[in-house]
Amino acid sequence: MSTTAEGTDTTTEPWHRRERVRDVVGLVARLFLGAVLVYAGAVKVGHPLTSQRAVQGYEILPYDLAGFIGLALPFLEIVLGVLLVLGLFTRPVAVVATLLMVVFVIGIAQAWARGLTIDCGCFGGGGKIGANETKYPQEIARDAVFALAGAYLWWRPRSLASLDRVLFGH
Image 1 (cartoon, rainbow, N blue to C red):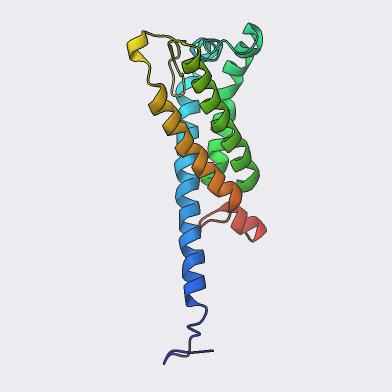
Image 2 (tube, helix red, strand yellow):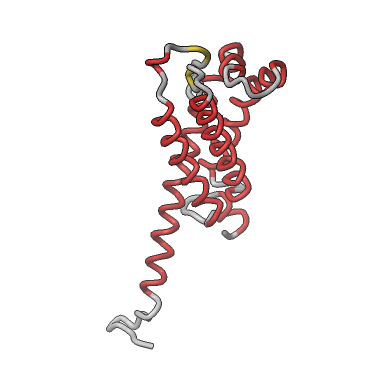
């Protein structure tokens, strides 16, 4: 064991620094993904018909089921986002959020592959648009970044300033 003049153990300092960096990365990932989810849900929650139309526009699910998902999705996004911002139940919430982002990527990709011309509806709006108005590559890339933030939290849910840490010690 090597020590500094102040008597601190320097053999574990790099490990502590790495852990601290990972805790900060976790905090950033939590706040980033959480804020995006809260915003995405909040802009849709007051516009249920538009939200329903956005999900129905993907033409994957039966019309009524797509309508129900369009109504429920904004509330799910808000709940997941708030829990991430608070750092409460981080791993299970990150699992759900990551899978949700993967579903969004698949939905957008299949719409693109099938030649549908729709607004993804991710941040409000949705439904049919002009072929020159689609932004499928950007939407897929954006949601993939969100999925990566969720995957990081799935892998390592520990972060700074989390209720998980206060309530459960991690």
